[in-house]
Image (cartoon, rainbow, N blue to C red):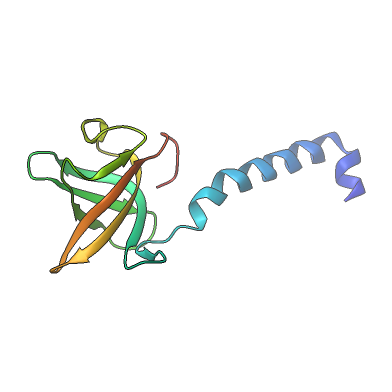
Length: 116
């Protein structure tokens, strides 16, 4: 390790590796359909389709199948509003399964550039 720290190019490589690690770490831990402490599930990904009129949104996680959720004006939205949700926006959605449908409990708008 001392060789890397004494070498200018090694320092650049180490800094690049650490930066990539921290950028990726926010994405790697979240999986499609992970359960929280209650009966809710969580999906993190990018919005593929959204219809405000129908109250339906499809999210594409990094791994796994797309998840379609229903939402209403009463669905909690963190970091913005339903009207700000557009295609390819990264989001984290907590949802429950009721009667065979995924019902959004909350939607969190994530910063652009977040891996979804």
